[in-house]
Image (cartoon, rainbow, N blue to C red; front, side):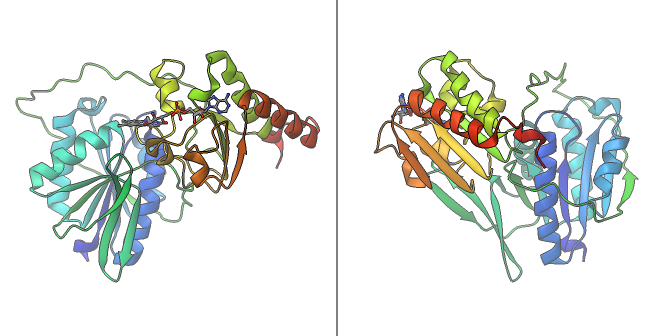
Length: 332
Ligand SMILES: Cc1cc2nc3c(=O)[nH]c(=O)nc-3n(C[C@H](O)[C@H](O)[C@H](O)COP(=O)(O)OP(=O)(O)OC[C@H]3O[C@@H](n4cnc5c(N)ncnc54)[C@H](O)[C@@H]3O)c2cc1C
């Protein structure tokens, strides 16, 4: 049933790509299972044969647009390809990652097709044949349920929180013609890659985050040491990024990364809605804050009221003592 097909628009670049593609496959699979349609993937870029083969293990068909014209994200060229494919396949849903590319391309496509777009969605609800998508509104203060009665439904999905999908399919790979883009008004010059940090907070099982309450940049060592002792990764709230201490790859929250670890420890973080938005789905939340009325305690499963400068080093010592100096990253 062509009308029930789902197209996921995957990316072949670096940075946010992997977390976005994982999420797209997970939600795309869920949708196609319920709608009995095919899961199709659009992959545009240059020299992307390996990526296409990898993705074909998760979808029914990968439509590959491979051209030097697409080596950098080119809004007009990417839009032309997406539009041509969607008009050809008439899917029910088109899913993008809520990445810099997805945020740009999804509304362009929606505008061309004369439909709306639900952006920054974090969940999908399927009841009988009706689909709805959950997205935050008013800076994360409420979650809205969005129902769209047009076709295709165009959605951008928040990254992270999805398990790496099992490779259960043997999809075909189809090359699609890119063709020229006439009178392009936008000419991308180059892509500036994010600085490599070696840390992907969206995938970590344990995240220890520091907020403005750490005071000085050098105090972040306390947070980093606890993260290391636990075998987790360090992260932060937005003020630390705004102060230029860390890049956005470390930031948890609405305008940063969404994390869903088994354990999230918030040190000196008040719990503003924008921060909660990025971590409240964590399995176990521990908050350390000297203010007993800090909103973070409303979502925390365990709370410690006190000075993080005293509590965090104690905790690190305890963890190291319990683990007997074992490197938790090497434990199986
Ligand atoms: C559009 C928009 C998007 C945003 N996106 C994000 C986002 O993605 N992520 C994000 O984090 N924020 C985001 N923000 C900012 C958000 O509103 C808050 O300003 C921010 O989360 C506050 O960070 P914080 O909790 O570290 O700092 P604060 O709110 O200043 O809290 C510091 C906390 O530390 C505690 N503290 C101080 N000293 C100690 C100590 N010695 N020991 C223990 N506790 C101590 C204090 O009691 C306080 O609760 C966004 C804002 C806007 C408007």
